[in-house]
Length: 152
Image (cartoon, rainbow, N blue to C red):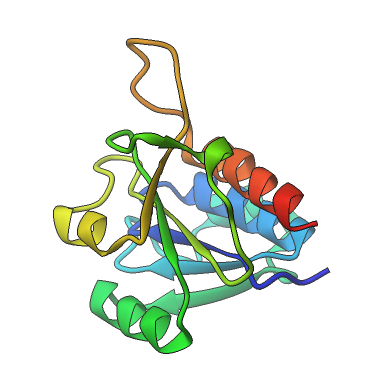
């Protein structure tokens, strides 16, 4: 059940969220790219607790920084889809493709403008007025779930 679709996390801050995302990815056959530096040690016990025994099943690639990730992504010819509260296109209105990399920003700060500008598409999770953001692990599940539904 492996997919060409990938989840990327830009400098994640919270070990528990990353562990939950790795567990989700292991269960759905998705690979995860972590763009470092992370705000925690990737061997953190909170990561292990959230990921449980699924971490051994997870396909995780660590990228030392944004430029190295971008070099890899471009060499693979993959589209970069950024989830952003500044986007205008709802993720449910977007046509996902095999090989897409769905990028989620830091819990504390999102992504810098250089990362925003590099995206092939910027997608939004519509929310009620006044709501700032959803938990990143929940956002990953929602968006990746829609992408997997479309690609099934």
